[in-house]
Length: 541
Image (cartoon, rainbow, N blue to C red; front, side, top):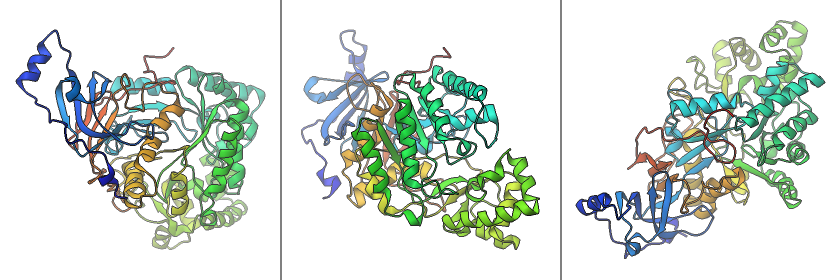
């Protein structure tokens, strides 16, 4: 079926007359024209229902009208002709690393050009100081709405540093207090990166105990980069890891979302349905569990996590380097690094996305060859100067991606950041994840229907987050809106040339203000810092 041909058309909708008559009406005390009227588009409201021809009116930061403007004499100060275009709620990125606090990332163009109007940060266990972060966004302005989690890895590091041991009772109480403080400040819940350090040093019971603090707050979410998506070392177990994530939420009493849910490694190609079955079993017994994914086959993380066993980092980077210099420790590290590289497809699959010009855009194997040493030695030499950002090419399976996209509980994420011009080579997912999903899986392959894809990016996420006035095109809801030209919609970012914005996003409004108009960024910082429940941050409580 041709998706574009199947979109509804309304031929009786007159084009707007914008001019003196409308301006006169705006000045009349007897009339209340809308601020913006989006006319003649195919409206997908975020519920998963088929598109309908309708007009969408905005007053201030709210949607005031979704119907036929001509039949009801609705007028507006500003009008957009959306004939032949698709109008959707603004997309919600439930797992991102958006650098909204940096000059290069504050306006969030990479995200806006995908139709994204809200992003989650503080994920993978990294969420720190929610009030400080939310306050900075509110003070400085941001291009998209943003909300955050308090991170288990950050909490553990604050109290225990990089120690590979269980916490004392006093340390656990200190960590509980940090989680409570984050929740009081508006965090959506606890995030974990149990694959990463120091989170990987924690036993399950520790995370359950901390998540119970989050559970004291209505709507709390446990967001997890679980312990083993399939490529951890030593292996914890792909299915065991999913079961652990469900347990942490179920025992504590929170919702659970699995970040960038998929199975990693060639040995797990085709196994996504096994992990999904565990989630569906939990959902069947009443646990609110969901996932989020993107359509790329590469990951991006850090070189230390991909090449150095956790025991060698006990005590931090200084202790790690001392072990590099100890012959007995080095022999074991070297052997285990080789095993870790084998799991990931070899050093030629690790593409460095580091700001250091001598590394950026080269594989670990290429760097090793340039230096005349083997890959484990090259990794250690890089790490002596500091950790490095790295992509793992081909770690995800296309068939797994296709299977997961069909699931009713699968949301969409970028898992990405726009790191600015210092990294010519970086992961393209920050620039194209949402567009790529629609382009590849809806328009080209016709694997999933457009209403299903849009719901995965809008209403499904809003419901999971507990939002009651965002994520849908409904009267009274916040005016986060995307207008897409499906004939032009495509992701442009590649692994070789990632800094390219998606095409086909005609207009994006954030809180009723144009962030993109006629395909051009306005640089408006219309985003808001959102606290748990969808409210807007108004200072620490």
